[in-house]
Every structure is written in structure tokens, then in C-alpha cells.
Image 1 (cartoon, rainbow, N blue to C red):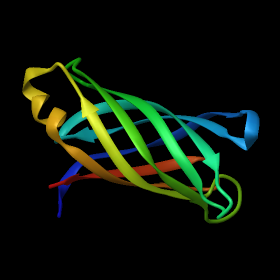
Image 2: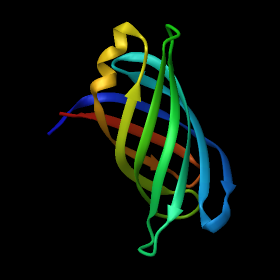
Image 3: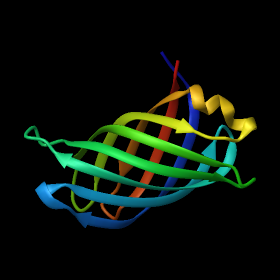
Image 4: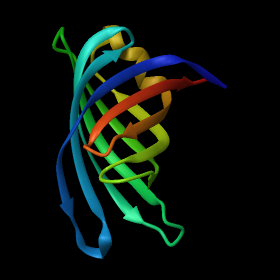
Length: 131
């Protein structure tokens, strides 16, 4: 069952690199909230092209709250283009790890995310708790 929104971020793609085998590495940064706390995020994901036209996504991120707490994030999922330029959609799961006592509940949460990118690389990300 999908629960409440646990995080929401918006931002911009800040780097793209083509790797061997047609893989694409994308880095983004943004601002938003996690568990209602203002935070920034930076992440890098690698998309591996599949014969079906989708990319298998594997990525890592760092969320830093305005209080200075750090949360490491691991994502997996799929993505596909939806229009011109960088316009694309991504769906998958996220796993969070933090040593911060007040955010320790994140260590036992699995997130389900949707990320939409427009043709200029601007993105909106929403993560729901998977209960």
C-alpha cells in the first residue's frame, strides 16, 4: 500500500555523460522537503538502455536538511523519453540511510518515486512511503 508523501523535490539536471554501451549518467540537484523538513538534494543516476526502449536506472543521492542532517539515498527503477530534449519519466523505488536520530525512521522506509523531467532538464520528484 502506498502511504503519505515522504519527500518532494524540484531542481535541474546539471550534468550528463555518455558512458560505454550507450549508458547515460545524469546528475541533478534540487530543493524541497523530506518528512516536512526543508532540504537540498544532489544525485547521480546511470541509465542502461534496454531493447524495449526503456532505461534501467541505478542511482545514488545525498539529501541534506537545513539542520545539517545527511541522508544517503539509493534508487532503482526505469525511465523513458516522453518528448523533445530531456523530457522523460521515471518510476522506481528508493532506500534511505541516515545516522540522524530524529530521521531514523527513514532507515526502515522504502519509497516509491515518480520523477518527471521537462525538455530543459528541470525535474519534479515525489516519493511516497511504501507501507
